[in-house]
Image (cartoon, rainbow, N blue to C red; front, side):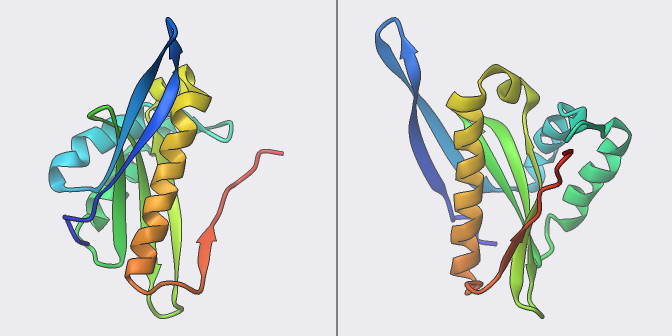
Length: 151
C-alpha cells in the first residue's frame, strides 16, 4: 500500500441561505493511528440490512486491526471536511486474480443526517478509490462486490 496515494474530491453539498457549501472529501489508506476512528465508525452502526450487528462489533474491528499491514488487503478511509466518515476493506486474491470490497461502514451520524448530500458521495469516493487502487496493482479482470439484501 502506498501511503502517498491520495484522492481528493469536492462535491457541492447543497444550498444554505442561497449559497452552496463545499463538501471536501479526502481518501487515504488507513494507518495504525486511524484504528480508533475506524472502531468508532463501526460501533456507530448497530444494524446491517436490518440485522443487529452490535454483538459483532469487536470481531469486525478485529478484522481491521489484523489486516492493517497485510499486503493482501487495503483499508480505505474516507474523510469528510477533515473528519473520518467512512471505511472500506479491500482484498486482493492474487491466486485467482481478482479483488473484492467488503466491510464498508459510514459513520451513522452522517448516514442518518444526509443520505443524498453526503453519504452517497462518500460511498462513491470509497468505491472509486478502491477501483483505482486495484488498477494500479494490475487487477483489471475480475471484481466481486457482494451486497446482502433483506428482501
